[in-house]
Image (tube, rainbow, N blue to C red; front, side):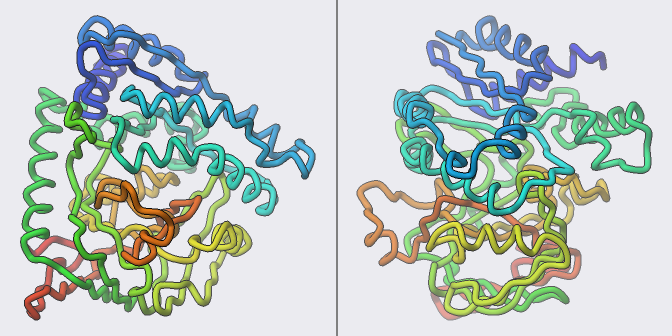
Length: 408
């Protein structure tokens, strides 16, 4: 498969499965400058194959962001102009489809306090956009394309050229681009995830019990929510989309005050270029009461100090070890891939699409046990030694995962 053919297949998959772009719909794509060739391929496919009305490409440059993080005056960190947030809010309210091609940051030597200040400012500016996203007013999808910088993080033992080639092989396989028809392969995978999702919803689970060598944790679930996996629909029913590609997860919102126990992450967490290894949390009545890390503890503490909701949980996600990401045997140093390797939890804001939060103010969210925060940080807790037991509303208990695999 030639380089051009791979990019064309990726663009087609992203528009058909990722955002479900409809004729006459606008598309906004945020793409790193190093992937300008993909921007052209995506734009052509959007107009020619999908009938887009208007395509807007916004180029990003991680080097420029790094210069800001390293050299901006302390008092200006996090001073994002509101017009940036207003643009995103208006775009999302209009029903425009949104594609984000992310980057993987590594080797950053940025003080955690500066990093935390920048993230707080960015998330504050984007509150309107995030509200529209949570209310499903738009379709969106986040993806990654290989770069040399990312490749050497995943394959440090290889030369740069060989590492990049190896990473491209992984990305092609994980994203099912090596299938005879990638779009149909994704539809089949989507249907499989949704079948498991429906079985979980039928059980009417009120609490999950996690047990493995790295965790003993009970996670209560909110009432009147639903397990989400596979695809979701925009509020107007126009788009059936998948927010992340790849995706292997089925997720729910934990009750803010009903998480208890201890947990240690089973994979490193790359947070804006700073790696946290050996993340450990003690949790009482939903709140993190103690934390530690073998590496990056100050970054973890900065995350937890972001705001009042950062020390509570917003998502619990189930991912079987049959995931092609887990089966690759590699740590990809990015949440988008690593969270789809094994089960994970998220500190901070509640997961979108699980329940309708329209019309709920902060007090209403809290009464329902739904956490609110500027952050949403996933960390991985699954392994092939994990057992999960579900407590159901009718009083029965059911093992739903054994040795990291679904048993329902």
